[in-house]
Amino acid sequence: MASILPFRSPRTPRQPEPLWRELLGAELRRLRHERGDTLTETAEAAGVSPQYLSEMERGLKEPSSEMIAAVAGALDSSLLELTSAVAQGLRPAEPAAQPATGGAFALAA
Image (tube, rainbow, N blue to C red; front, side, top):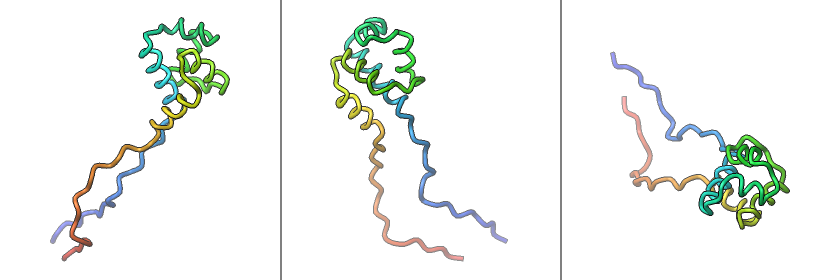
């Protein structure tokens, strides 16, 4: 007698949403490295402690909008530019083009 195979849905399981604070931190670190600034230099310019900035970059803090704006300004960026870059990171990657199938699937016994 033949085995019964489970039917799998063509959808892939949904991945968990990334955390805003982690994407924000990654963007802050990218901007800081792009400028060649140290953590201490950027923290001083923003008026925050280096420890706090480090925690922001590692996605451990949920900073206020004032803190985000201060760090963005220290990095010669704006709140709009920073949040736009983070929002871009939230967009799903474009799926690879799927070859066209000739129609519906049929199961035969």
